[in-house]
Image: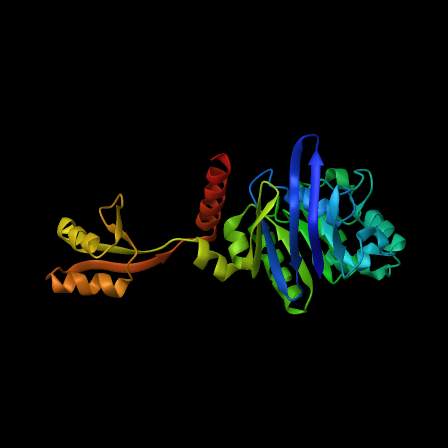
Length: 300
């Protein structure tokens, strides 16, 4: 488990992480979401001992990262700012990591094959494309077969096949009971892989909940209805307390009433419906709505 307790980091007069507290539990993929500048990368760097917090702590299975004797066997990490020396080959780089963490040498070939870099293992890293470099970073994170993964924007540079491979890998590792924290700005991809969400803005915690509950609590669910007499139906719906929005295609978006009630009101007034459907906001819409409300309340 990863435990973050009252973590705070300031740079000059700017508070980047502000009293952040949360836990990342095993057996699930936890998505770490926030707008640019929300403090996600700084928080991850403090977890991994790369940045010293001003106050608070980050613990992995009860230990600070620097207390781990062979860290790659406990935590696999991929940060956007981490990059191996460009003159090394992938094999030499991973062999160095393996030797320094007492990891069997055979594991190097295993992870290179896992990330589809076996054919480029003896090429210098400086000749790699962005996607190949990202796969090498993932190989390094997986090298020690760790129970905990901390990944910052891991799909950057990956093609569609690589993104799907990573998604399936993370789901499988979570099913094995591992602890996985993933930061990503790709909301569609996050909605497909994450079980739990930690959402931050301006360094503060906004939500720590399951994906389903996050959308139910913070997202918009509305009924879309289409009829040949939308004005007449609008009056009926507004008299029943609904809020209406007219969509570009002329259909009505109804907030505040379930589809069954909309159907009953239309039938009671003799109105035929050409469309009646319920829609729930996407993760992206829900996230942007929550962060936008937080920003407005902060400015006020």
